[in-house]
Length: 83
Image 1: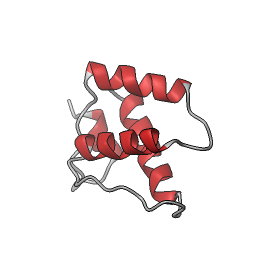
Image 2: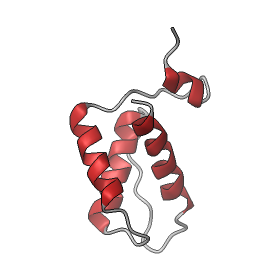
Image 3: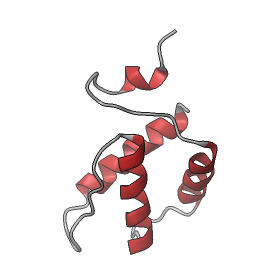
Image 4: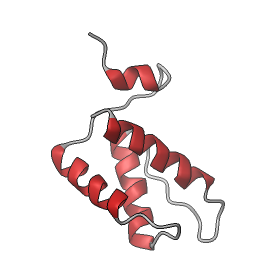
């Protein structure tokens, strides 16, 4: 049986399931999610995204375009919902 996550992302994307601690933390993040993110939450998103997707950690510039963060959150939501 194929892994559900490999069906959701392109073949060249390395993605892993969330650990139980990461699931718990992400569930709390979803519960407390707001339109404006604190620096701590932005750092959390970037670091978790890098771990789950085997990427180098990237942090956005202050007051930069929020699109990359939105994409990260959407992809982490997909992983969370399919883990």
